[in-house]
Image 1 (spheres, rainbow, N blue to C red):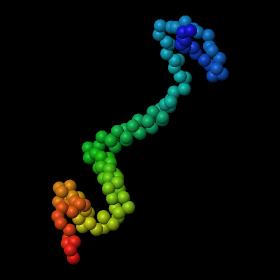
Image 2 (image 1 turned 60 degrees about the vertical axis):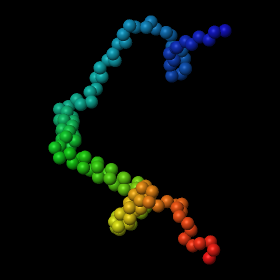
Image 3 (image 1 turned 90 degrees about the horizontal axis):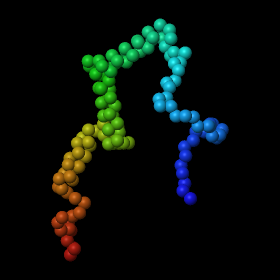
Image 4 (image 1 turned 180 degrees about the vertical axis):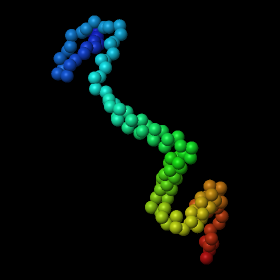
Length: 124
């Protein structure tokens, strides 16, 4: 009882199509009689569109990169501050304070655990 896998071609109704002799090289599809850009106006419009797009992305000032970087910066600020972004943008000192606290915490200047004795002795 050996199972043999056989590949067959089926049509859309699920009927098995008769097997044809395999050709050594498949024939290319016939060329379409309807061309996408058949008139001179279509070709000129396409050329104008491609030229303007090419100039936009290959301009010497690369203004599209400036806009892309600005959008990236805005996304990073939104991810970093979330709902507090308007408050932090209007009070830049808060951002400086937060950065200093994060830097001191990363350097181990303070931790949530007390390193010395209690602030008030137990005997009081």
